[in-house]
Image (cartoon, rainbow, N blue to C red; front, side, top):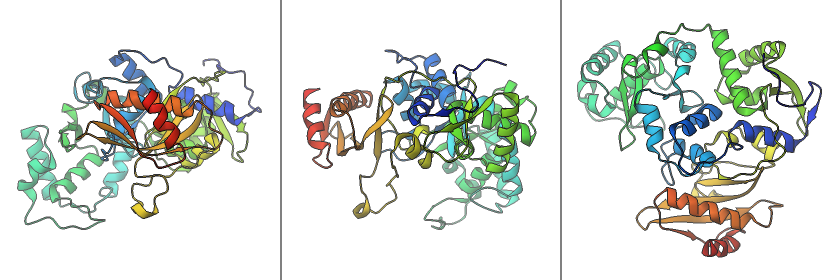
Length: 410
């Protein structure tokens, strides 16, 4: 059993600043950036975050690319494609947090979740006909990796009907989603239009991983809690349960076992009235010197109560809010400077004009004097990574005037 990397005792209370630094170090913000990130750099980042949430919104950059950029800086996105689509495959999509890339070795750990979805006859849809399932499996076995569009002619009759929140899912799409949720197919990759390509697990998951025994439900829950604790550094039961979207009852049992074994250390965090748990390998750095724009789907800001407690930062995604009711904007990214979230910006990649558009910019209370200058530098770095030629700041938000001047000087 490895020794803790901190001098904390089980009864010690962490200050909020200490808890922030622990959390940021666990997420990889103490790791050095490299001028030319390699697959090793990428894999290290995936190990820190544990999952990379997938989302279809592409107003700036798709969600799964951004946390890697936030931690290692400009990188060749082909690294992510290689890791998820080519041997040796390092990660695969599954319903881990929500739809997300996860390390491929978690496939057997998720089998208990797959079994649950089989018992429920899927997640979003119920009662997909057996004959549809049989046809889809047979076609994929013969064709190889296929999209729902590729297979619609085999099982669909007539036009699609717009139901269920407006989702326009074909029968093929419903059947494939069921097969994916229960593990009978796996995601081999996506097309340039972001359509999922499904294939048999044996053609996606490495044979050595597929051959691993299925953990018991208790063993699987413990492993997910263990990984969540390592990625968080320190967190409450709610934090640990949210990371892989598990229920609190099995998480509580797993935490009790991990505390007994010494892997988790009970601590208190200043200002929290809930018990927290420190991972024994968590680092407590004296300072965190980082600068990063955080995607709305970054693990640092996933759990909103945690974000408010650690950073005194109230954050809500306003994508689904009517435009006239939005406070800060459509796709707002928090700006992390050192160990504080000091600003937020509504960003859009205007690819037609080659411009990174800052539609609004807002400073947090008490933001440091160098906020605008540091943010301007990071926006320039982001624009170059996205292949954009310029950064333009719209005069909306209390930080916009100062940021506009700083961008012009950057």
